[in-house]
Length: 387
Image (cartoon, rainbow, N blue to C red; front, side, top):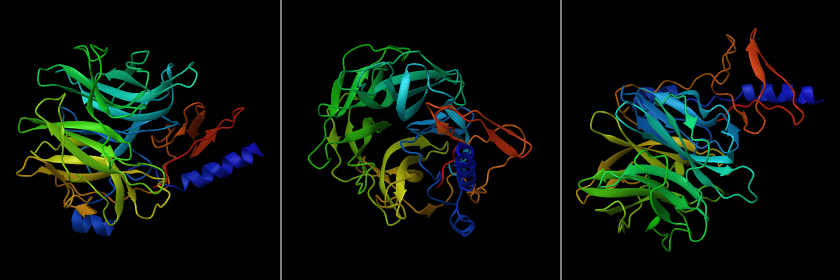
């Protein structure tokens, strides 16, 4: 019976799409690219531009492995999945695995990734912040072997940057006890704390108790804090992106009364954004959003919007604060049509789009045009994202 169920599950999942980017051919020909640029369940994106001009992006993976899926692009609209930050979770980590944040570190092309996980072996654990290092964005990533930051109220949604004095600061959302966005100083190598946490921004009366997903951009001598507010996940969601700014990274911050992003006609509940430059002087906001044909909010896909700055110094995103449905390709490379929903079974290596429960690694191999999945006491699962 188990073998039959597995065969049925695999046959159904192979029929789904495989977590790449792409759009309908007519839309691509007319407009350059259509949102979302990565369709599926890929919330809380973080992206960087590497020294060679390539773009790298990772997202929340919740209870699935590879932990924190990793994508690569040369043009911001055509993304290829290349695996994950971790093939399996480091020993100290238990899921869910949330909100990884890529950060370029040092002059040699090194990369850090800061992320949220729960520690193993702890009763009723609260989420902590971890960190791993790699020689480049493609990895391999090496976790430090223990959490970086485990405050009594928990911490999620890490973001790291240097303040006006050149000191690295870890921004995060406090998980309990009032929430809010906080900052704690880091040692110069970014691998240990160097002081106490300080509140930067508390939830306002219209935030539903939530301000999270911080990202900071320096512009015109000020630190502009991008953050998400509202309910992200359960329907009905009212997630949206907002901004505040300060002359000092540690505040005080003044909020823009207007949201940076609100619901559009086709995309809604947009937020938890990451800003990346395209190498040609323009900035882009990558964030997650829910398509209007998904009333249960099952898929938070990756959406690309232009980011520009108004004469008053506040950022403007999308089309008058709404996510764009389609637009001109950022680097002049049009979006390719969506890939075939059926993954290639040629060769002996599994396609990077396959996923499995993080606490039950899949024992699978590919050969002779088929996938062989070995059973396990708790069952065996090999799955693919369905946009």
